Length: 219
Image 1 (tube, helix red, strand yellow):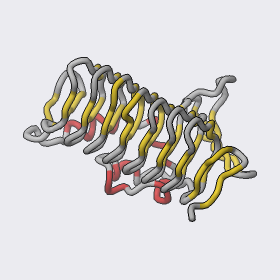
Image 2 (cartoon, helix red, strand yellow):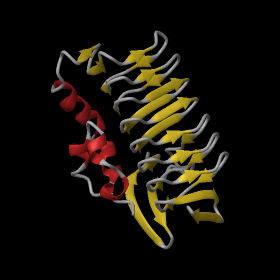
Image 3 (cartoon, one colour):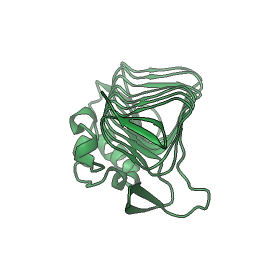
């Protein structure tokens, strides 16, 4: 339930073909910067403008004057990067996305139609097609003891070998306002998370996280 093909529609991202080589989506986190450069250099100049070193922005995207973008980075068609947004590099942001006010992105892939609209931090993470982070919700990408992050599902434990790893959101995931996704969280397709939640581990597709003791299937 946490393999790349089970979580993500790879037709919905510029990086889809690259991600297809990864059995687990977090394997891509070390490669995002390299992929940005490879994909960016192949983008059509009539559709994308190169602004600064290794920064490609679709000509029909909207980037507000107070946003700050560091490369390598790709911003897709009709995406909005709003006032005060901070993109720290190694970011592939898809088409029709929203990177909102005071949002910080770092080492991420946002599939098409992803919304991170208000006061979100998303680091070392992948957000699937049409996933949405409610206002103030964040990915926590480093454990307090700084040890490598593992993905846990019941008694199963997958070591990622990564000190920094936030979350993987499958397609159509909804994360409620002011929630924290702890390091190594994986949310399956169409998962919903209640507001003010503290989430960890794997939540199966088609479930609702109400709290750690109440993860229920959709009806």
